[in-house]
Every structure is written in C-alpha cells, then in structure tokens.
Image 1 (spheres, rainbow, N blue to C red):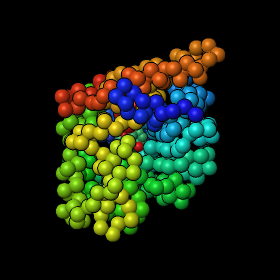
Image 2: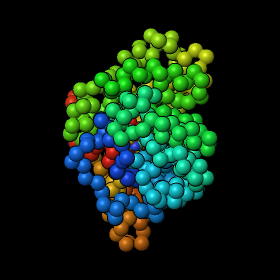
Image 3: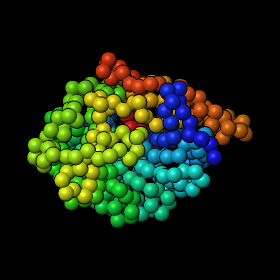
Image 4: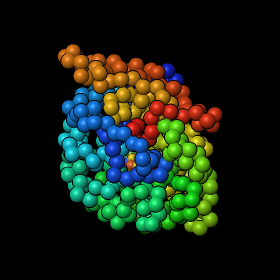
Length: 334
Ligand code: SAM
Ligand code: SF4
C-alpha cells in the first residue's frame, strides 16, 4: 500500500474533497448570487466512472479519506452510483458528504446502504425565517427532516455547519450551540471567507464575524466551554464541550486562527481540476487526462495528483486581502 503523500512543506495530504456538481437548490447569500450564474453543462461534469478512476488513483498514491460535495451533491441523479463506486474501493477509509439536506430525507438510507459513512449538514440557524433569508430557497422543516433521516440511517456522528454572518444569524448561534446539550452532534461555526471576487466575496468581508465573538456570545448565555483534546491534528475544527453536554461545539476559524500548517486536503472541482488550496487559484487539469483515450488514465491521474500535492501552497493570504479570484465556493465545494 502507498505511503501517505507529503507536500513540499512536509504536510501529509491524504484527504480528497470531490465536488460532483456546481448547481445548487439554495442561494446562500455568501456563496451564490441570485443573478448572473452560469453552470457547467452535463457533459462537462465528471461521470461516475471518471470519479471512480480519480479515487482509485488517489488511493494508489496514499489518499485515504474522501468527501463528496458541490454545489449540492444530492442534485446529481447518479449520486448513489457515485457513492457505491468510491466506497467499494479497497483503501478508502471513510466516504463522507457535505449537503444542505433539502433532499436528504429520502436519500439518507440509500446513501448509507451504498457505503456513505458520515454526513455534514449545512444549517445556519434554527429559525425558519433566518434560513429563508440567509440560505435563500432553503426550508428549515425539510432540512430538519433530512437531518433526522440521516441520524436514523446511522450516518453519524451528525455534524452541522453554520456560517456566521453579521446581520443574519450571529445572535442565533446560541440556539445552535444549545442543541449539543441534548444531542451527540457536532455543531460547528464557520468564519466567512471571501471567494471569487464578486458580490458574495464582498459580502463575506463586510459581514465577517470572528469566532472569538461567536464563542463569547455562546458562553455569555450557556456558560463556559472546555476545550477537548485534539484527536486528529488535521481537523480544521477546534472542539469544545458545554458542561454536561452530549455533543461538541466546533470552531472553524480560517481567518482568526488559520490552520494551513496542518492542512491535509486536496480538492477536485466539478469540472475536473485539482484545486491546490481552497483560497488560492492554482489548479491542475485532470479531466483532459481522463478523456485522452490513452489507455493509461489511472497512472496519468496518479501522476497529476502527485504533482498537485507537491505544488500545494503553504497557506492563504486573506489577511493581505488576497483569495481565489477564479473560483467561487460552490465550484470548489468548501
Ligand atoms: N451545498 C452543500 C452545503 O452547503 O453544505 C455543499 C457545498 S457548500 C459550498 C460547502 C460548505 O461551504 C458549506 O458548509 C458552507 O457553509 C460553506 N460556505 C459556502 N460559502 C462560504 C463562505 N463564503 N465562507 C465560509 N464558508 C462557506
Ligand atoms: Fe448551495 Fe451550499 Fe452554496 Fe449554500 S453553501 S448556496 S447550499 S452550495
């Protein structure tokens, strides 16, 4: 079995996040504008067989963990086939998915049966009005039913991701954190990041809320939280527990507390490019190699991936006002 790939900064890169679609059935204010969007035509998306080849190539160079994301991955009619193909590969230790859960209620069990291990649900508030305003087109009841179905199907531990956005949900973080008292879920608060240079990027700068402030809000109402020992050094979330709580509160703080030094991720965009760092523009095309008809696609992809790992930048430059200009979050997958 291949040893774990290391980049030029000696980080072990063994986690591939695969964006399988750029479309979405929500329009979160910091992610997708209402107008001017152009999506990839179907033939430009990677097929289930191509995604499988990439995952096999990734395993051959030492990748172990995989996540499907988007856009909204549940919009792919062939999602179950994609999960089956990736999950059955020898050497895949965990296949997770990030979703807004709008379509999860009927998919949770088939996904589990197909081999999905875990799910992260993006939910910014427990207040249906805020969900409608911040995650435009979202519906709290449907998302909640999706979460319940995921828990019943055993896609656990359930992890909720909330993007804290000034003027929308910043005071509702307390209700989200309170969920961990009764449920063994992970409720994680994410700082806004500007991507793509457009109106969503500008909003992400203007409405940024530091997790230092979010923590203060939570503790002011629910009492002190205690930091938990780090189980996985590459975990982007710093984890805490409220006294007597069953679940975990996590803070993902790319701006106030960057974790680039322990990054273990490579990303694949929906149009088949290895995107070297979420917040930089560097990419290597892989779809061309997959569709070249060379007959040695697996080896070619493995080589491109090894090169992508070697080229990974040290970190982001958000504090100097620089981020990815060519890509938005829904095209990379978060
Ligand atoms: N549609 C799915 C979802 O929302 O979970 C998967 C794709 S979405 C791009 C992945 C993650 O990106 C979500 O958890 C969302 O919170 C996060 N996200 C989107 N835009 C963001 C931004 N500007 N800053 C920080 N996180 C963002
Ligand atoms: Fe869609 Fe996810 Fe972006 Fe929201 S964050 S618009 S749910 S892709």
